[in-house]
Amino acid sequence: MTLNLETLFPDTGEQEEAVVTALNHQDIVLAMSAALATEKIAVLHMLYPRTDARTHSSLDKLVDQLHAHGLHEVARLLSQEAHYLVFRNPVKAWKAFHEIRNDSLAIGVHLYYCGLVGEAAERALDEDAHRKSASKRKH
Image 1 (tube, rainbow, N blue to C red):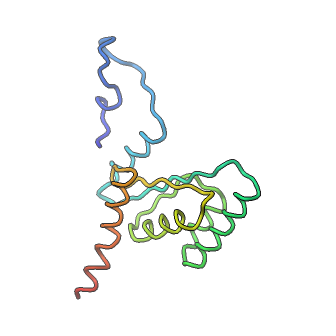
Image 2 (image 1 turned 60 degrees about the vertical axis):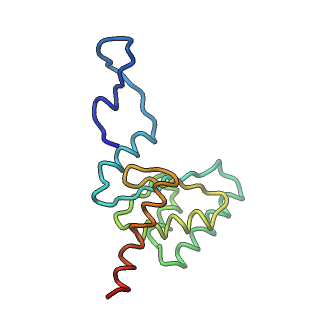
Image 3 (image 1 turned 120 degrees about the horizontal axis):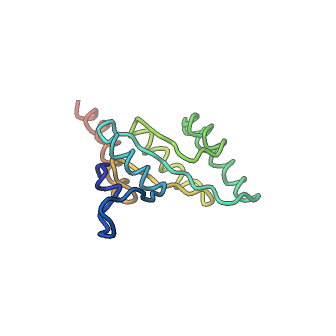
C-alpha cells in the first residue's frame, strides 16, 4: 500500500476535484506501516474492553506474564493501557504479539506489519522474526 492523493481521494465521479475524504484509524495505521516497511516496524493495536473486575484481573495477569517473559517495557505500557505499541524489532514484536494474544482472553490485539493486517501481517512478521534465528543456527 502506498499513500498518495489518489488513494486518499478516490474518483467518485460526482465532482471534478474531491476536497474532503474520511479515514479511519486502520487506514492511518496501515499507511504508516507501509511507509515504514523497509524498517520492519510492527504496530500492535491494543483493544481494551469496558473495564470491569474481570478485565482488570486479566490485564494484571497479562502484565505479570509479560514481566515473567522479560518484556518489561511492553508490560509497563500495557499496564498504562497504551492503545498502540510500535516495535522496531520483529523478534520482540512477534514475542509480544503472541504473549498478548495467548495470555489474555479479555484484551484484544491487532497486528499491522509492512502495510499488512491480520493473517498476512502475522505470516510476514513470523517470517522476519524467525529469519535471523534460522541464519544464526547455520553459522
